Image (cartoon, rainbow, N blue to C red):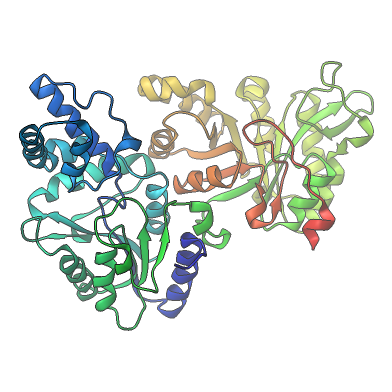
Length: 493
């Protein structure tokens, strides 16, 4: 099989097909069981429900990694448990009845890590769709959609009837033939099928037979499968990790999501930002009592946070460098009072207009009066406050939370900022959007987290941009708060 990462190959193929057919509706087809859903969890749940229903404890200690057989080969799994032939057959018969019951289909599934993000990525691309091509029977269509949509809710993934092809006959019908028929059905509906993902080699072989032009990329999900691996078409590509960082390209990011390079407070980060394509740079602004200048620093300038003052960048120097190349600036005001007035003077001196200015500060730091001063000077700028402390209220007592946000709105606050790792952030972003607030997600540490955040479609993302995969070498605080050292000379080469 091709040693190149299957997600990288998929990205290249999608780009080629999008270029070849710019006006057409492209679709990638996913099998469900063993491809989207890790069926080991369903096998385990059904077997343990047998114990619960019959007062036995055969499967009490069974764990997911120990389920290494296909869901249709439960007898092979049962042979490990020292059961009598009669008992094995009794359990197998019960299992086969329960496995595709509505309750099992609805509640006992779990997706493979990363697969929902990959599907969401394609769903937000222009004229691109995700279709389902499954061997499941039509009798469980509603339960299948309900299950997948419940699992996909957190990722904003949505599946619809018109993009679901199912087995019209009994489940033991020729499934490879069903998969080939599914491809033809999507094509007849006007879609250009550019890829098919399936864990069964025989299914991919059948799809290859109806694709003489080789336009459909055949992706083998190397999980647990029943048919022989040798059935895989030579042009198929195998993989077992759905890695969004290998699939997504910077040029594919949603255009309306503003990107902000966090903490360009030092020469290294400023240089990296200026060399990037990121439109906004964020600086932390404080007043240095020794020089009485506005300088860039996240931590307070006191004895508890020692620093070399010669390393402090003056705000006016950074504004000059950023303004010279037409970039935009986000000022995170760490202090009030004179910092507000002097920051406005520095912006005016550097020639920044409203469209290129963004202010962030804690609501309690500046208050209504402080934000009012900023708005008088730059009425059309972005005015943002972090709301992490309010999240429990917003999620659990939304009416009370909305009252607090309306107070902020009356101050002229037009964007709210939340930390990327907060629980239920997808639900929170949706709720804020529904209330008419733009959302910024900040402290996004790495490319994986960044891409997952982009899938939520906030208005903006603030990140360190420590993304070596994209040749961005930002501060890289990451989850451990550590700094990575990179050689600028090495990067340039």
